[in-house]
Length: 309
Image 1 (cartoon, rainbow, N blue to C red):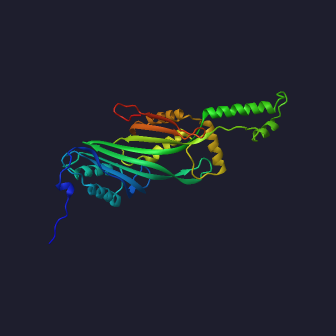
Image 2: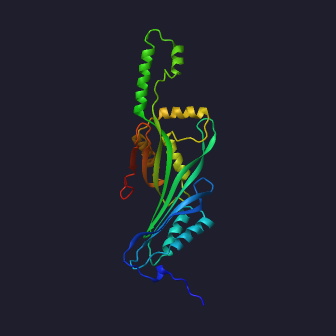
């Protein structure tokens, strides 16, 4: 004699009635194929959050296993792109048609790109933390791509103070200004006595979130990375030779940036790419080497109903 297993979520009512904004699971670990524009589909190790709302106040709960199995099906048999993300959200809601009309899913993973060095042409892998989030709220779709990009920033104030000390050292060393020897000065500039001070720089992180237009099929991960790194000029490097390190030092010296400078550079290029991104949010973090705290700037596209600072 067999008996069916009890389904508490289906056959009992809530002890206390009420609607819930989101119910689901976070930090689901799964391998996933991701479609990035102009890149071959690539396997990543993703951590996934999956949620639906609970609009029925008397219902005990949702069917979490249904959400999990839908994600597992995508992991085993599909590729994450814009259309499969939308289909997944639709399935979240249709599998809970009597309980939910809103759905949200978030995929977080490292996306590795081969990056070429500045001069020597050597290549190495760089990992970019990526988060892709889809929301379907009563038929309104939003797809968001977020990427963290690490770069170097050299402080303009520190650079000016270092130059002042070098000028002072020059005046103290070459007191006879009427008899300056080019060769002697040239050799002196190559010593620690000549370059008596250097500006401080720090590893910095640009956090970017963009709302993708519905015309995009594959996620523009590489394009967004190229846009940001090309604007900042000083992304951290992978494989380098000495000639690359020297060029990196030159680029830092020619691209002195407070966090405000970095934010405005990126704001400018993101506004220019408005045909690709419906909205954007930027947070610039300069992880100070002088101070124990960080310097931060935040900016948005500034559209009505869009991202808030």
